[in-house]
Structure formats: C-alpha cells, structure tokens
Length: 67
Picture 1 (tube, helix red, strand yellow):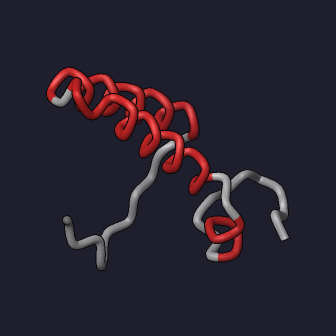
Picture 2 (picture 1 turned 45 degrees about the vertical axis):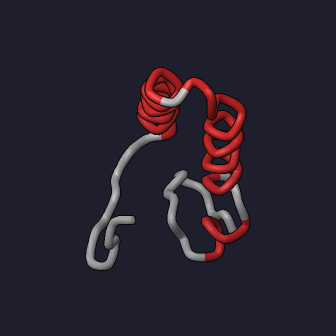
C-alpha cells in the first residue's frame, strides 16, 4: 500500500469516474476470477467519495457550503 502522507490529489468527479472505470477494467482483465470483489471495491470507492467523512474533512470543493 502506498504512503499518502504529504500528497494532495486533485481531480473532478468526471475524472474520478473515468479513472476508476479504467482501473476496474484493468483489474478484472488481470484477475477475472476476482470480478465480484473488484466491482465491490469500486463501488466502495464511489461510496467513500460521497461519504460524511469526505464532507467532514473537507476533501471536496463543490462551490457550495457542504456543512
């Protein structure tokens, strides 16, 4: 697992969706027997990006006050 300390990630929701879909396809191609797990992980990543934790830690900028 990578060390994320000190890193800043910048991407739009559209870029996230494209990159995650590409990652999902590549992983399924490499590990077809893990298809269900890979799809579950991708869904979890999408859920996380829309989570209270992301809002609470101000990890997104929407141009609106997210509370």
